[in-house]
Length: 65
Image (cartoon, rainbow, N blue to C red; front, side):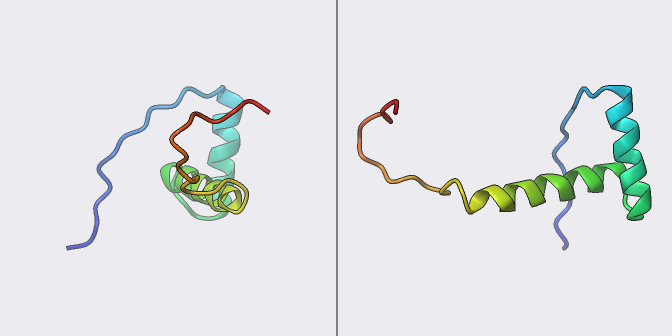
């Protein structure tokens, strides 16, 4: 059986941002939910190169630099 999406995320956005997202989704022939998911995944992949997934454990809290 294929994976089914079961998690719900509630967001509060300004009406203008919501309309912009709807326009972007329509341009790519996506649902609004799928557009937000694609954007979140893209953002995550971009930052994965900058922020290590599992920082090394030292047993001490991170120091403020």
